[in-house]
Image (cartoon, rainbow, N blue to C red; front, side, top):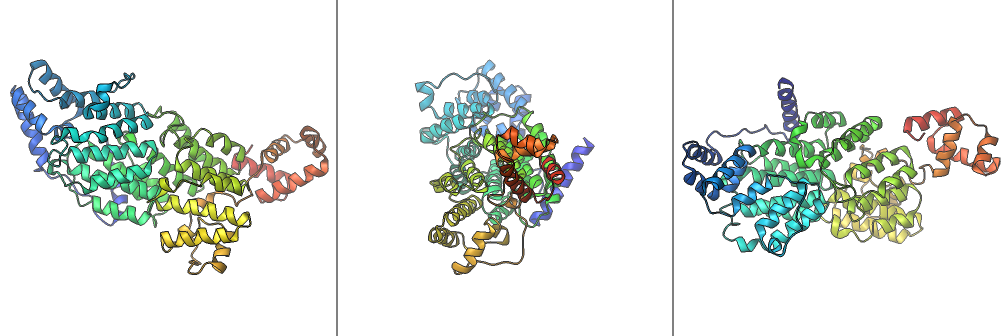
Length: 522
């Protein structure tokens, strides 16, 4: 318990340092606390009818303000005593009671917003996030049926928009997530549910910090601090989102970023585990801690976290991060095996596939991978710039200088001035071309570390044949033996060895083996 308090303090201090603000604390006299006390007083006195009426009129405040066990106990008591007539409470109880098996949606459930909401939650708890988003979309389409239940005063509009945003995040539809979270931010602030408004800003900050506009993320975190903290159990989960976003902001050292994420209490991460892992993995790789990143990935994958392999963001984060580790080692074979396990419909998967093809020296395939995904990357600055960098590099390699120019000019027109970190997304060849050909292309002598620094230069990753040769070198086989095993001539083998030495930055057989071992290639 003492260590937990220390970690929470360290995390809070780190976030305050990044944002320049102190962490606010719950007010003893919040409207939420008043409602919860009235419910508890009536229920403890055995006045179940009054308690049920209060819960029905303030169901979201009760759900978040009471512990899950206490809320469940109350709803079960109301049902047993025959008090209350709202259809909402049984559905909320269903949401709180995960089940391994779900009945196929019936015609009735398809048209019932409450049932659609419950089904979406149940699917999310099972890690079936793509299906959950489909169910949530059906609920959103017919939520008008519940007016005035889902109105500004009851807070259901805010709740629905936020939950749809979270579901879309986990499903990997970041554009839909941004739209839903914007809807939640535009909702009038509900006094008993101010934490939901704060959460909407924090969730969007997470998306921008990882894949969008870092300065927008910083502003969103500051906006989130405008909302007073409450005593609900959801606050600790929101704090995790703050730590995830703040850890990826510019100006924070990689060491501090990792410390901030390590200070997070694991039991508080909840559904945001894919984003927590994405942030931690990125910081570890950028810090050059490849072995630790692999160990953390192995530990996380063994936790049995809710996801379906190959579906959505949650089902793709493990293979996608495995791809980046393989690429940082120059192991294209392993990268190709892993990319095939990710959800191919995601923009992030397509972009990483494009990066893989770029590093493999296959510009046409790289260009194909990142084409036609603007609808999925719009509003997310990092994803857009990564896409532009891959397209520009591919065009230049293919000899399409005019096409490269058009991509870079469009990147400037749509993104504005590029920061030194963002400039590092573009290869040296592309930047040299841009400096000569593209007016107003920014030039900076201030080299900033970037996530892209972990990857080898295009064309410098080892081929599957070269990795096989490295394995045979490590076994101490002679050139003649290796050439015979590979069914190639000794002269052809010498060409492979020269390529291997160049790509690994070594000049001898022994150093090649040592460097390959260090990178995890053999």
